[in-house]
Image (cartoon, rainbow, N blue to C red; front, side, top):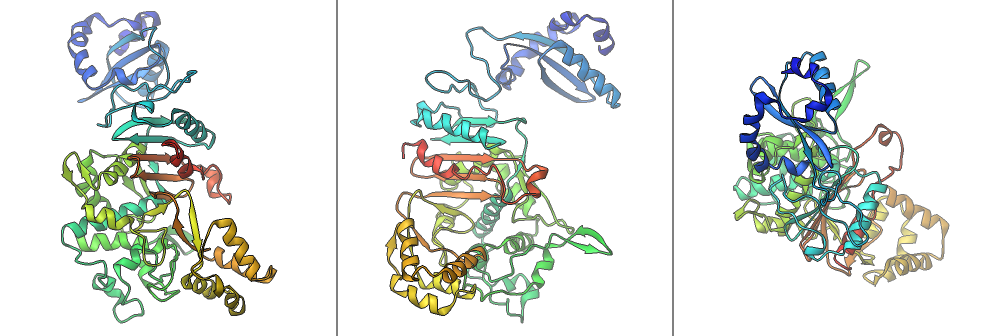
Length: 504
């Protein structure tokens, strides 16, 4: 068949070969059932069907020339493929044209082109589910201007936006969004009875901690960034001048930097160690365990993890996933752990995950609690965080009259500056304390909450339980991201824009 294609002029590649007319005529309905046509959006294109051994697949090309070029490249690389058929398909003139799953601009509103979802999700349009169409359009354009790789929105269980910028839909590293999946694994172990209480001592599993100052660290403290462990990860080390992959288990040897349960401090090492914990308590590595007990239930097969030298997944930030599959997890959480009538994650665990932790009102069990507006409150815990990070006791004493007073951010900043008499040294010490991980104040939401998993470069999974809305924004890392600080194109206003979608 390939030899025949070389001799046939390009114009005739648009016709189904005589030898395969009947086959294509019979099998075309089967391809249609698999939504082949749903990915064919250009006004005129070629649809080619190839075979390599027992594997058969279809591929879309913009012209007959591209079909021939593809075949030649495959031959040069040593692959033996066979062209089964090639068909020219003409899009009806009345149907709008755009890229797969995208929008075209109109005077009134964006138009969702995807009629069927290949991800098992029903599809809707922004206006049909009550979203502000102008806000959706602005979000799509903002995502594009922020160099996003993907934007996905689900409202009322319907996929209303699935937009990819540049590359096609392929898995993207979710960075610290991965932490929330470690929390889900803990919840599944709790469901199975393998974890009896969040107050269990980690030394019950990490025998290396027995008889050390870390013997009393609890699972709850690990899940709420209050373990007191040093935050640095153990992903690599130098051996004889060469950089080699490290072991997460090396983090078990690290020192404490504060008393367990005493201070909230964002901690990557603790979450990496939780991945090790899941492996020890379940008998399976974190990735295998989640695939069996979570992802497979939702039809998700796109997930992969970077691992350490011993094969332990890096729980704190190296999971890759398709953006639409990440949105499915958000929908699962929105539905209180239920997926198509089956309770995958206990409802009680979902609620517990989103409940404010003891030391931080904006963090649950590796999930963030986000509101549009907050009151700021100065508490004893905040003053303690500032003290252990270098703020002079004399300055802290002047702030005690402000304890437990609720203020907006501007008024809060002004009150602190006034209480300190505008002292530049005091303000500098507070700034340094914040850079070292202290919080500026306890935050009390003044609007309804959204719950989020967030990661470096502006990876977002945001869940609005009030409006039954899930939003995902992801961006692929490029080489320059690892060279420059601060990072660019992080779409910092994504959560704020999520509030705007439903009219808030």
